[in-house]
Length: 397
Ligand SMILES: Nc1nc2c(ncn2[C@@H]2O[C@H](COP(=O)(O)OP(=O)(O)OP(=O)(O)O)[C@@H](O)[C@H]2O)c(=O)[nH]1
Image (cartoon, rainbow, N blue to C red):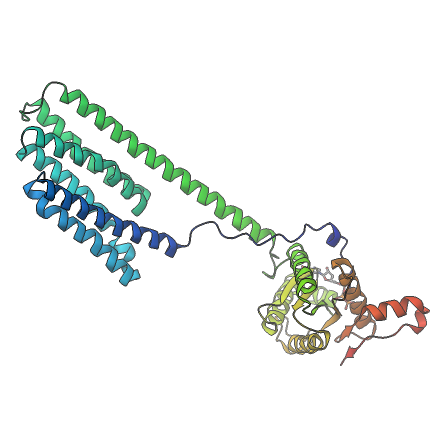
């Protein structure tokens, strides 16, 4: 046993509040998208009603706009009603909106006339950047880029060709350059949106890998349990919480008995497998709220929150019996020793660990495969007496 109270405990950073994942949950994203679709459908209907009321609506928009509102709103309703349909239906409103804009623009140019033709062309062109934005919000990056390119080409190419061929009689010489400028601005919109989405994705990637690094830094590679650094944070938090709420807190330092012999007789790889099995076996005996960490080497630490010493002794016994009954990869029984100590007024992480270590030392000294408790009172009276008369903690079995 190489057990020592943690000098690192005092220098450990105080446990900070757990960071909340900043990446939005998928259902939050979906909810926002559904809301956007409902607002979109309402706006299309509002535009339709206004144009109808003002008498500036095209004959084809009389039915195309309500149809578009129906598709957009209907898709939103279906997505809310059946969330599994969400990924399938997501492209539908975007594609319909883009397609509608292409069709209404061309219909306007082919069948509209006079100033109304210009009004309709311009109003449709105003909405196109919104269609690009929807593409990047609702679709995957590549798909969005494809849809936007298709929409921009579908809108501007025929217009430029028709203008070039003089097939747009109401258009003067200036309309051509104007059209080219608008087309260029649309290319810029799409590129800008694409850059923003790229940036957002790379930020999300950076956040994910930072999160992964944090998890790795707090996890023991062999057992998958929290490591010593993480447990020091947990202890500091649990101690502060215990002081604040007055709830009891007990910790137990656990050491595998004669583990060196396992390594020596069965090899280091089997030793590793035994440690993993012990970790899993102990974790299965604890409540989810209890902390269990690989403290180092063949040592583990249990942090039993809201647990008085008497209950922790029962818990330690349960863990000890479970480990000794647990089938091990090398086919032999393995036992553990535990040193328990309750959190008492005036304790900090260091004093707590020190007492647990003393208790563990005593468990080893008394023959191993047992748990021993140690309180502050015992520490004080031991300090006051000669070593030969030191009091002994509660011990099992
Ligand atoms: N396989 C393996 N062995 C480890 C690991 N970490 C520490 N050990 C071994 O654990 C053994 C601990 O031995 P000791 O400290 O002498 O204690 P022990 O043999 O368990 O005896 P007691 O604790 O006194 O019962 C050493 O042989 C270490 O090499 C590990 O990650 N994997």
